[in-house]
Image (cartoon, rainbow, N blue to C red; front, side, top):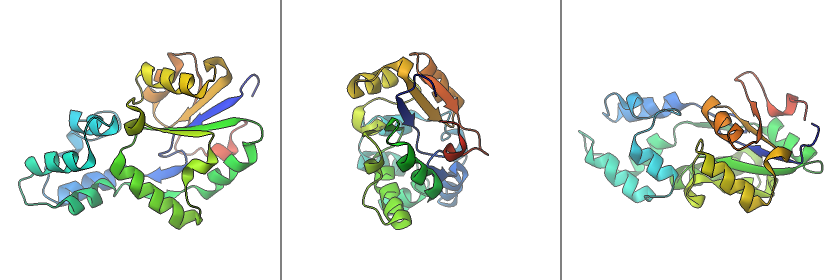
Length: 204
């Protein structure tokens, strides 16, 4: 792509297949009613957003979930349900990152949390035999570690400034329209990755 020097990738449903409904069903199986109304990619209870911005710890998150549960639940049960959404890494997409790494600086920007980070790093090693997903990128940005979360404009500004890159020379790929709009608001070029699309099939 003309003038593009940097590409920022989202993680979920871009490089790693996820299914939010699996986490919803897992919590409902633990006795949480209407969990879907409080947890979705577009609408989150403040406790979930606070976890993703590093304002509360994983343990504090579990304590909050236990406080609203009608049934006794353990931290392990909560974490298992919370991680149920993860499926498999897209190996062809990861291989594509290696191919284009000589042409672009690659970055990762994911809304995530301490519980999920541990889980998907374990899945990554199982799927690929490699020690860390971060090795594919010049730098990986995780919302709970940087204190900023998509789709807020200050999150993208932080990444641009920390990486020392220009918005007009940067492409952002994400599967959620609101995250795309957030990136556009600070002048970043964008591509909304549709469910049938894979990054290795894009004309980059």
